[in-house]
Figure (cartoon, rainbow, N blue to C red):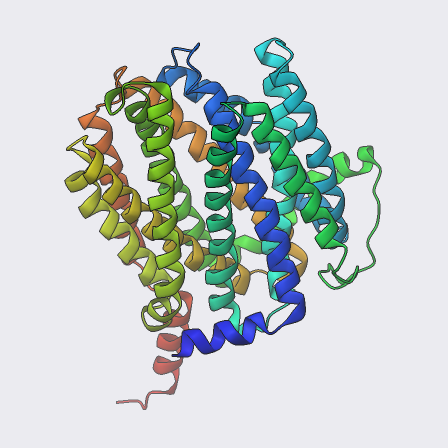
Length: 436
């Protein structure tokens, strides 16, 4: 099979394997840390969580990325990306260990959130750097399959990290601090693995500078404006459309995640521990959907084109999400988790490929950071909308229907235009056709 052959070729590339290992360890640690936070904030027996409290926690942890994100992109285009992986993961290991100490110290909630925010803020640099570095370790002909394998493997690693977190929590009698310490060890392993990559391999090509903070702040607006101008060029419009589609799909995913959290916490379980186990099952099923997306996307997107594959993914979600979600029962929700994992990751693989192929290397760090900011703002906005619409037990027909309409909107808007390549072919055809 061509996909299997391409995977073998990719895995035979030493530098790709090393970069993939950094991703797996880093995102595995993210999965551990996120489960620990969810258990501490939402499923603690002492807390009576509401959709509003979940949305507030998401806002505290994610909205500041709107400020961090642009700086991440600017600095990624100036710093050696390999060094970002080394120092970023070392810093996260230290901050995660500090968060574990705060969990057992009875400190005010705001101090705990501040510590957790610092851990996840560094994540913006690491994930954007991983995406921007991928074209440096594979050739352009295998970029689609690399985008299927690498980010999807990272997502599966995060899912596996979440499963490992559940196991450690069980063995440690419900200690969320012990789970966070496990995440710190994985961050440390990611930093040490980054040292196996050559310093200059991942770019950027120009001589890196170490700007003072004042210079970085002063140059951020100018550099971002240059990136926006780069993105606004006519040949980049497929990237703009794909980014817009994924932002709206991220909104849908965020709204459904809050709904799932509340259903697992109250409507579908009798105790917080039972609800947490149910959430873990849902995340595992969604991870299976991510895996299937990695298998089917390269061939399907190759035949249909990335834009049309996004249309298929959004259309499938629009049709199946209300059919499965309106039951508000465990089995249909597990099926919905699988479908949403598949279509979300499938569309993301296509979007990553479009952006990477459309954007020049010197701008990739900034564009992927903007991509990240759009994701987080959409996610927090979705949590806010869900908080307004969800009843205490999470059963909201209106929210399920709203999300289905949003998916349908993506499918209609993305199918209504031709791709850049199609336009260019049409232009060439008109120019070369004989006069009548």
